[in-house]
Length: 74
Image 1 (spheres, rainbow, N blue to C red):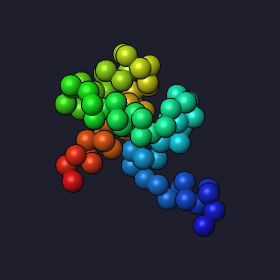
Image 2: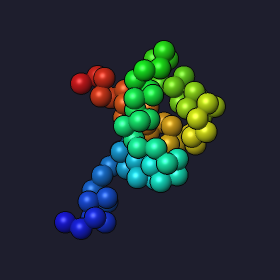
Image 3: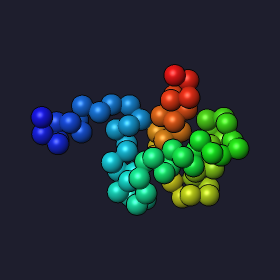
């Protein structure tokens, strides 16, 4: 499988991860740690916080929060 094929196979929120790392210069795990350690717990509160305090765009913030909160549910 080529890198392009592997990237195309990723769906859902994780499909945003390569562009998030490239645009903001931080690894995904670092963003997820910020979300996990935040005192905020609700999806849209976390999205708004990432946008306001960390400068993320809505789609990127939403993808990170959705993926991180889904891990909590497992």
